[in-house]
Image 1 (cartoon, helix red, strand yellow):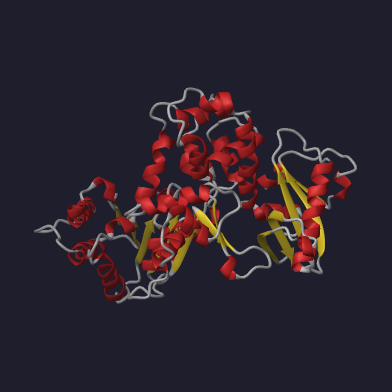
Image 2: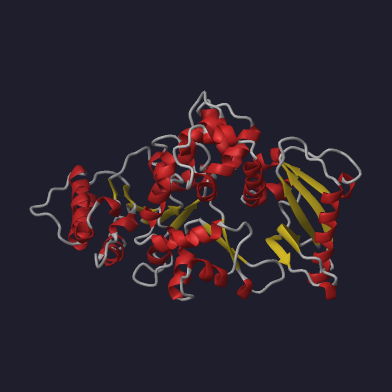
Amino acid sequence: MIGRVEEKKYLQSLVNEGESQFVAVFGRRRVGKTYLVRESFDYKFTFQHTGLSNDDIKAKDRKSAQLDKFTESLEAAGYFAEKKPTSWAEAFTGLKSIIEKSKEKKKVIFIDELSWMDTKSSGLISALESFWNGWVTSRKEKDVVLIVCASATYWMMDNIVNSKGGLHNRLTGQIHLKPFTLRECEEYLKERRILFSRHQILQCYMILGGVPYYWSLLKKGKSLPQNIDSLFFEEGAPLRSEYNNLYRALFNKPEEYIKIIEALSSVNMGISRDDICKKTRLASSGSLTRKLEELENCGFIRKYVPFGYKTKNALYQLIDNYTLFYQRFVKNNAHVEKYWTERANSPEVRAWSGVAFERVCLEHTMQIKSALGIAGVQTEVSTWRCEANSEKGVQGSQIDLVISRKDQVINICEMKYSETDFTPDSAFDKAMRRKIEDFQKVTGTKFAIHATLITTYDAVENPYTGNLQSIVTGEELFV
């Protein structure tokens, strides 16, 4: 298994605990949650079950279909009821029987895609509450390890992690599984003997993000452009159809979520809630708040407050690399033969590369801090922008990465994608000085300002390079 060292170690330690354990595993779809749990327990469970995708069943039959599937899992584990369960309370009675009859020292129960099982008026959560609170924890034998998993992170947060009902504070542990880093993607390719240079891995990350399943589709012996054509643009390309499946699998009514995603894909830095309403024509209501929170919990967007601003000035930004690539290139270019191979060096792709590289940098701020030698320094990471104001002598600036440090230094970071060593010129130097001047005037900061370049290779030494305090290279993002 690539990465996930601490997560695997933690899961394996559960069987040695003196009390029964109830753990939630959640994270973005396709990030490897199921694989992690199965590998951690060597695919050996007292009972395991995976909920049915609601796309596969009719709305009116969802509860009965989920119960029937759960009954199949009970039977696979050795439980046979005289009649099929018609409620989740009855279904969990079968699970209790399996646990009681098991001779294993620890009874490891794995329920995957729990959110899919929670159909309308299903009674699933109340049955789970009764199972855990009224039965597992009351047993003299403290021998149950219950692991529940779901890709619908917002559902897990509401119903399990931050439950205000019977499951409030009942979890003994949780794992929010994050996408791979660049280093982990490199390790994964080496494991599969797929030979990409680090620059090509970076380019691939700009398209796929760190989602392990997407990387598993790359083929040995193909160049990166050939792989991207196979994944997105050829007939039957798997990651073209993935887009609609991705949002349908997470949200019962995905149309409005996709409207928000499309609105955010049209801008790079982020937009306000009011702007989202204008672009989508959705009302500014509690329903919109809920949808934004759900998209954030699932890892598709981020909400952030620019440096020096208040919470009411929060912006929303689309950060899912796959979704951004789909919206920019795939949505309107299906079945175009050799699309990426022939356009990989086009002006449109070069413009996108700059924005995509910035997102990769934002996903690797820990590595950037390490490269700057401040891994142990307390910091606040944010963005900043200001409008032009002639009265105050402000020209108008946007800074995509601001690292404010406890040691009274602020790194103003400029991220530049380049196919070769980056050459700072007078335009770059002028823009950098303008941003620093605007930042100092508007924020009134007393901290020292360090001009910092983050680029794919290195920087060519010249007089303008001397005005930089720090340079972080693409190599250092792989730490």
